[in-house]
Image 1 (cartoon, rainbow, N blue to C red):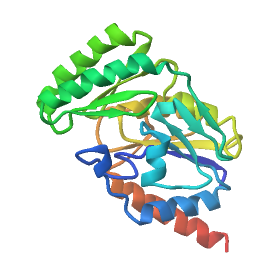
Image 2: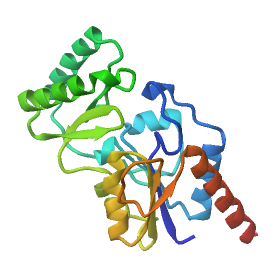
Image 3: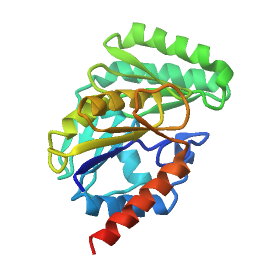
Length: 241
């Protein structure tokens, strides 16, 4: 296979859950990714908003490149870890304010990732406006050099200059991705950065689910992706024997 495969996780490889810790990774997902990893000579990467340590707990994939926290941290296929420098003191103050808000508003959940912080309102969609206003206010007061990142019922504060598109572009310069045709599969607004870069590189961008997108292809849901990849892996495995 001469393709370089990149996947978002939540909403793409696994169904969204009420909380980030509540996802269920079906057994065929790591097995399928491992087979794809072997078939492609290791050219499989996970591009996610989650921290790399979190990915290692839920979906351990030794030897697989991972861009975590929207590219703020990247672990290359050879294990080299690259991190974006972030001052943690002001982010700690943001975390304190968010924990207070979570305590006062049922359904909100703060997720501190080390280099970024997210406020989830998937269990309290009526608080969307409140969540976005609060994050804009905290950004202005404590981390003006950060940017607001919007997602599916989540709003995040993260340092400027990194996103999933930047992460894919950087990984495409590294072995074993260099010289291949990139493929990126995602479902969220944060994945649009990746779609745009892959389109620019004349690759294949695939959107999971509904909604406006710059992706050139679309699959209905997580199950459709797993079926499509499974069929492809089985076909490729058979042809190499």
